[in-house]
Amino acid sequence: MMPADSMGAETRHAYPASAMLGDYLRAAAGLVPVGVVFATVPVGAVAAGILGGFAAIFGVFGVRTALRHGTSLEMTDSELRARGLWHTTIRWDELDRMRLAYYSTRRDRRSGWMQLDLSAGAARVRLDSRIEGFDQVVRHAAHVAAARGLGLTEATMSNLEALGIALPEGYAESGAAR
Image (cartoon, rainbow, N blue to C red):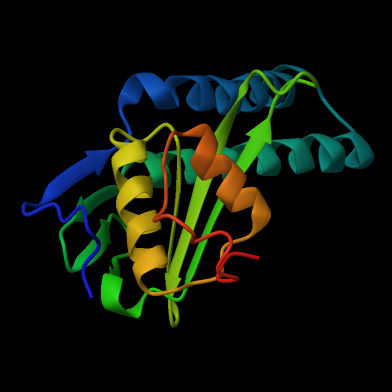
């Protein structure tokens, strides 16, 4: 079952360094001061535990950023492959869940990012809107989800609409989207 907008060719998507720079800087902004304090000031056990906890949080954030930056996607008419430290493949004909969420960084909701979660059985791919071609991946996934009759949440439908992605006429009213 192919969506109406079949691609016909493989597309590749990756996180550009410019999009990841802010996350790398945030990780460094947390790690460097802690490292400087440990290197220059004798600290007690309690302070070392607290500072070590902050260092661990920022270190994990830095590692997650590096893993995301090292991940690329290959999308075809039949599947979506994530390549990086872990390899995951989602076959479009097995897609069983699609969720598109918006995370606002301001109260007025004018700034933020989107995150797409796709799964097919145990296979799961999560990507955010900083990846090149995000809208193309979302558009294809949405049409596959509609073709498969997957139920989409109201938030997902609203976020698809915000991206200008229209699903087949009557999809939302058909009861498939709840």
